[in-house]
Length: 363
Ligand code: SF4
Ligand code: SF4
Image (cartoon, rainbow, N blue to C red; front, top):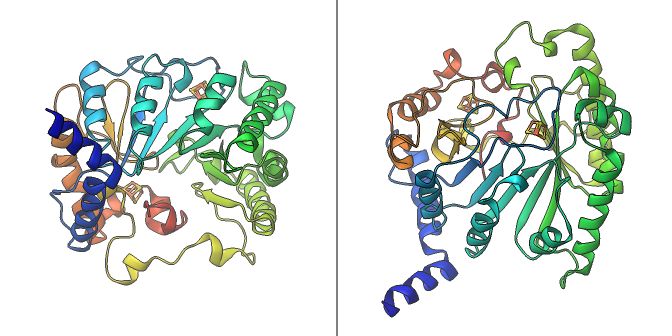
């Protein structure tokens, strides 16, 4: 019994399973395998659909409110192999199981945690816990001005957001190595309401020491030719805003991940935001997510990535997560992406290259 515990602790500290899984995964990607022995390297888990807000564009509150005990157990069993785990809601800080899962994941030194949150429920106790761990907080902000923020994020107060950001930065400063284990990112959904705010986001990021911005499309817009992103005014307005954003981001060293089906105009930052696609040059697939990641929703439904328009992978309440990982749908998508024949099923923005290939993988 004692030996088993010692083995478990040694595995945790050396990260042996994680390293071996990563190596095997890289080999299987290079071989374009459709059935994998390697396990997901990144897992995204929607813990709950409960939320304290009512954002105008929300599509995250449908389905069962909480994950089943069966799925929670399987998620825990994957910690030893995972490089990234992302906790989503609803609002994760309303989930009863979040603190236990977060603490257990934090005990695996090589596992990096990302928390998507509106940030309004983070109190001093949580700020202390977060700054003592290795974690990226992705704050859903959507507006960098009070009027825009409160118009989109119904029920939220801009002053509460900024005071919580100040508190998190205070805790970071007080941490023994001066930075804390915590990193601050923000996310904006591209909307008609926040076109100007996207162009001004770098000033907000600088003020609140946020170093990464992820811009995501409305889920309902994917592959929809009549989406707002094809409206002339939205397209041109977003292009101008993205231009301003990229220029300011380059100056300040911020990272921008643009998942919108709209590219900025050609600026000096072009090379920086479109990382060279080594795998594609070598004849490999451009998108690596079908080999690297899965999403499990609170109702057990499995998906691949928020940019993917397809579903039907299976439900983790009915079969094991790893069974779904090598199920028919995952194999079909791997086959299509590996052969370049994914134009009939994937997000046209991924296939056409509007979404930079560097976004479509974990490195
Ligand atoms: S914070 Fe997220 S889950 Fe809550 S209402 Fe807004 S978009 Fe929906
Ligand atoms: S290319 Fe886009 S749509 Fe296709 S699998 Fe990758 S992320 Fe999903």
